Image: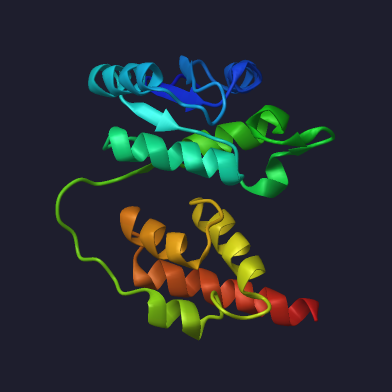
Length: 186
């Protein structure tokens, strides 16, 4: 699979792993200490070819994703579920199986610029037990995996659902499946 956009990853090991999965160029942020020079490089790549942000599914990876999003609008996003990023020595893109990387990069989300109808997600997050309950975190993990938008706390989940324009029908369908599986496993 060949990808035209430049893929932003955290380090050299991520680049090596991604290149085993797809034919693509990468920019490495060298961890969470992302500097102005790297931001400018990402901005230039975005203008010329487009950018896919593909960071680790952990706090530093999410922090890098937010920093890039603040400075370079219109980037695409690929997410790898935590379960697919676990290795013997840690958590990250560099530990993922090649097929999991391919699937994550096939399910890229593009943030749409301009106007669209934002949904007030808070009542739905409460209704489906995605915030404030003992199972909320696990449910958000399952939802993020199924929608391919990554794990997020309740506040970030609201933002991602709108940012990636997830419609209410899709959300409800996935949540009904998750709740049914939860009941069946008890």
